[in-house]
Image 1: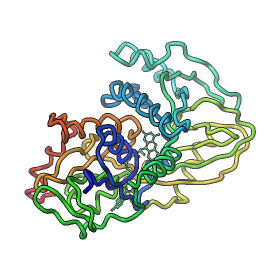
Image 2: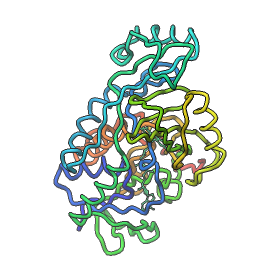
Image 3: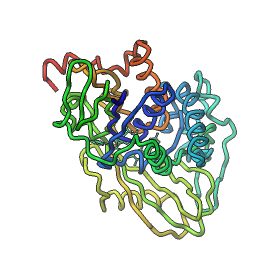
Image 4: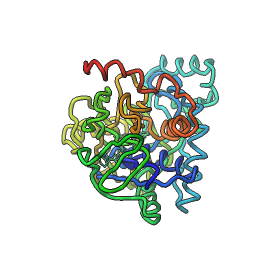
Length: 353
Ligand SMILES: Cc1cc2nc3c(=O)[nH]c(=O)nc-3n(C[C@H](O)[C@H](O)[C@H](O)COP(=O)(O)OP(=O)(O)OC[C@H]3O[C@@H](n4cnc5c(N)ncnc54)[C@H](O)[C@@H]3O)c2cc1C
């Protein structure tokens, strides 16, 4: 008898697993490698939306929980995962510079925006306007985290690299049985895979494809992140992640020549030195219709839950909403209304989605 089956091991699956393990619960995680959003992510944590200089949804509260969460994983997995990395926003006009200062007067924003603009960050990134420094930002090495966490779960016999076959699930009374394993409940952390999940595919998960290029440049010598039309993220050893794209139409995980051309065209307008492309990756962000996560209990099958819909901000959102869901399940607390999938219950029964 297992307490919980968890389907999916991205940022959601890890955050959910951690909460259950803290409570001493027995878990079993199934993962089929069908989704790679968490693997290809830039891993950036940044509470500010850099287009408009506004605070992302509940991002300052999420940041407070997220950093200790990833630090505790560093300790547990004996692996360095968090890298503090300042982001420099490249301004395209005087108006944008002025907007930066206007934004600084708003609550919670000023602690993240540095008032001292800098005229230049790197000789290979010329600019007619200044750069604004965003503070308290960085990256989590999500790919490395997933690799190490799998090994950690595997060592306690709690991980199986296998497809969760929905038609093999039997729901009986208060529990469920899956291929001989009995579990009290199942939490689906299946990312964009939710669209194939017969229990939860009534939820409006839209998905948004993102692609990154991996660039090598001996001359760039950049040690901070740059945000212009795209991000340039230094990875060390003269390697940089450049991206990402946003595509609401193509829902395949395959890198495309169109995205490569688009990113290279944007990148070439930002930097002046030589570089070469060494790789390209793609994944589907689990983006939702109302830009809020999809978290909670199935309207009919009370043993089934989902923790999904983190869009482009999984690094910050995952630890907070996983904690809220586990508290809801184990301690009978209420879920915040804006993440609770009960907002779609009517649609589940009307079948109108
Ligand atoms: C290009 C790109 C860049 C990004 N950059 C950032 C960033 O810088 N910062 C940030 O915060 N966020 C970023 N994101 C968003 C972030 O990656 C997501 O919000 C987050 O990874 C979603 O995590 P998840 O666990 O919900 O989904 P996923 O990571 O998609 O995980 C889903 C898991 O479920 C498994 N699964 C699905 N169906 C089944 C099944 N039937 N059986 C077994 N397993 C199954 C999948 O294999 C996978 O393991 C980026 C995303 C992309 C694509």
